[in-house]
Image 1 (cartoon, helix red, strand yellow):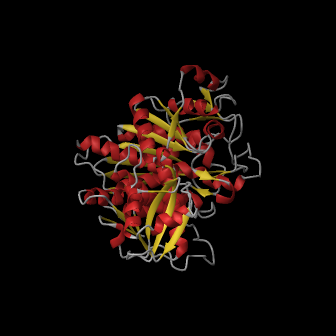
Image 2 (cartoon, helix red, strand yellow):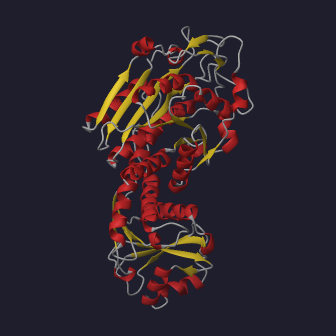
Image 3 (cartoon, rainbow, N blue to C red):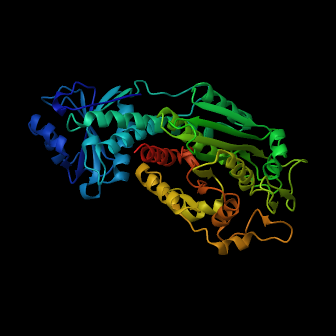
Length: 501
């Protein structure tokens, strides 16, 4: 897909299609009014007949509009003008792209980027239009013997900006949007891959490919023997039940002018399949447990986006990759393991395995002397109950880091919601037989999981994103969402700008 920006009048566009917004009730956008005037009221006459009211998502395709050079004009309903904000803009863009892709218009000039979105500038509008376009056109048909592709798919989209001064800003927005979209696609592809293909070794191979393509990136893979020497008893307790060996996958990107600048570290839970282990899950929906590596897919995607943007930061990605399987070698409820930090854990439920691979990884990344550490995990079903599919759960021991992540999520349209980490919740992890248990009971399950991880993050600023409700969709639209790549990438962009300022 090719994107560009230009500045010009709608009637002078030589294109297969131009896209114009219409608000309720039958109110043309400013550009639409301009086009209507040139066409001597052709469009407004059609609207008066009731063909399009302007409700959000309505579409009307016009052919041979008088006194224009384009083949078609696509009118998109934008809802009420006073309510037009981030969400409405993205829905309108998505509807425009899916409609264009079905009309056979291989190229189009989009004037939706000129619509007024509350509090957003042209950079934001073009960037999010690129992301929405790539998201709409995404398909995962790698494993299908026959693919059903559009006969004449949309290949080129031009965003019109009001003034020539906005051209440079628009081009920058396209670059940023494409980088985020590439990261999201990478995450989606990893998440959608079946677990017989996407296992810990496969993830390690993807990391090695990323490093091989960029001189600024180093790759280091810890095998189970390496982890055994480091004392990662919690991590190994999870992977020991599977024929697939666990791996701790590390990518280190040095983009800062100062190579000794403290890095930002992204840690991802990479359970490529989670059966629950001995505490086995119900069979219904267990196929979706291939998505339990959604946290690792997210940090992979953010790493890809950041390096594609060549951000002037030092960045480390650490993915705890393993399978959680029931077998004669699997860990049992009641087992006590010693973590790399020296703390002991009683495993009361083998299906609370994500925190076990993460706690050793969070201890391991101390070696990088990190500026901040953000871990991302599909950690608890309790987070789905609390926040549903709209927001990721955020827990943090450092208020500035939490605020930065929340702000990045708002800007990226990939929101998170902060939950407390009060000391009172720590008591739920008490056990008679070890320093802590790996579960704290049903109440506040997302919070007690965060409390568990917090015990391994005392030496740096840390935040945890629980993406159990946001990393994938179920039902007819089943598949990876690529979240929280937009949030993480926006955070990294913000940090790179603050460091270079």
